[in-house]
Amino acid sequence: MARCVTPGAVSMILSNPSPESPSDVPEIIVQVLDLKPIGTSSTRFTFMATDGEMKLKAMLPTYLSTEIQSGKLQNLGLIRIVDYTCNSIPNQPEKALIVTKCEVVSPALELEIKSDVKKEKPELTLKPKQEELVNNDVKINEPAIVLKPKQSTVPKSAAQIVQEQHANVAPAARLAISRRVHPLVSLNPYQGNWTIKVRLTNKGNLRSYRNAKGEGQVFNVELTDEDGTQIQATMFNEAAAKFYPKFELGKVYYISKGFLRVANKQFTTVNNDYEMNLNENSIVEEVEGETFIPETKYNFVKIDQLGSYVNGKELIDLIGVVQNVSSTMSIRRKSNNDLIPKRDFTIADDSNKTVTVSLWNDLATDVGVSLSTLSRSTVTINPDLPEAKKLKSWYDSEGKGASMASVGSSMISSTKNGSRSMYSDRVFLSHITDNQSLGQDKPAFFSINVYVSFIKPDQTMWYRACNTCNKKVIEAVGSGYWCESCQKNDDDSSLRYIMVVKVTDPSGEAWVSVFNEQAEKIVGCSADELNRIRTEEGDEKYQLKLKEATWVPHLFRVSVVHTEYMHEKRQRITVRAQAPVDCLAESKYLLEEIEKMSVC
Image 1 (tube, rainbow, N blue to C red):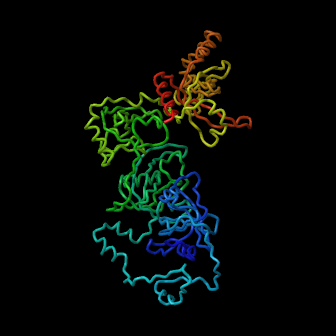
Image 2: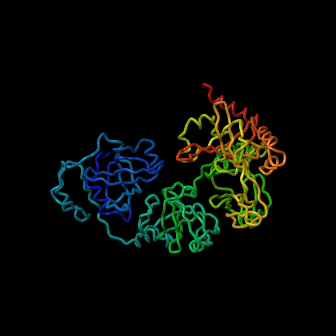
Image 3: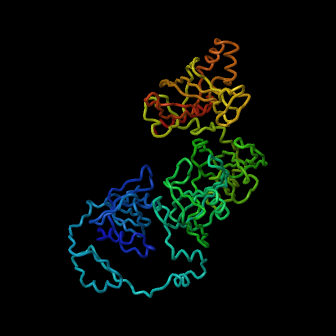
């Protein structure tokens, strides 16, 4: 195995920044320096490519992350570059090398390779027909350069090659021979023209929206290339109307004239630093007869393991046997009062647990090959997968007669972000209060088992809210209440809790913020009722009601963030979900924790 770099490799790359195909790339071996991940990513790495004389900033393809994590590719190692493209760096004269295919040649060497040879003549670029003329001048004592004679070939056009080797391939596939296809990993917002070849692995619903700029429509798709890299693409208005009927799940497309921007991780579900926008001028062409683009990859979660995902932002894959299907019902949407169809069905798996899946909109009435519960979720009936065959075998042999229990019986759910099983991420209060760095960069979520030890009676306990949107209202001129959010006057309003309470556990105590839904469960009545007690029955009854709510145990799911008050940063602990203590479930949890501590 060669343990040297190709002399002038960086110059070769810069002189041909975008090869038409891998066959146009000569033998290029470089050494890897300063290998490091991009931000917190575990799959994207940058490095400096060196040939001993020159260096070039570079990025590795994502599939090599396994080689890096296994130690096969390290700093000072050698790689052979099979295909690449060079992109300009904004406001800088240098270019960045985007490696799209490469091979590990050697693990880490002892030192960085540096060339001591001084050039006295301008660099010579060798062409295939010149090799015979200069081959006799190559010195035996210079092992770094090896020229291999190429077999003489009769030049053929792309059309001739296609006709000989792929006579029956469709026109769109023949076009692939002549066009330059860019891997998704090589794209960035500053790149010019590009063409990608991708499979549509997910298609969202066409949705209507309304904002300050007016009304419109939008939909998203998820695209996957042959390396398994994914990207989310979004289309608005004219582009949405143009491409929504054209995109079909599972088909392969050439896409060009799109635009990239930094991905908003809150609204994307694929692992990519960028997202794509297509407008009405973008080009989407279907590729006939393609099979090598990866199909959808699944990472199935057992139903009994759903506790840690309840109402979280992470999307998961489930596979199960349908137990029953409900009739279609109509639900009135709160935002615009429209009626939308909904249908529920229950599935079970070999964990002997069941879970209910809800289908919405038109898909609730169209039970076909593919059904969606959300714009980013799909349900496939009778998938041709090994996991499906294994599950069917289990159900036929023993699942039919097995006793099933709903997974919901062992977890607490909530509609608030961060809600998960009350038995996941369980900590003592001291874990939060003693670690002031928690919540600095992003919210941290924990579960706690605490007693409410004190509720300040003289605090602002509630605010007056709109009955439609729950936002704060003010007294209108004349009569009624004005809601700035809804831009309307209402004759009536309601009170909603917003308060702080002190909680205690064996490790210490802390003040936590509590909002309406959780506060009603703690106090035992609504804010309107507590206000009535205070105004009609007096302060003594009011304080007694608050005192009755103390020293009662609760399971809380809390978020921890940092806020600034009077130029001082401090932790803010907020209750996101509440549940009473289930003694049986709590005992099982404690026994499991004790078992983990046992010495095997």
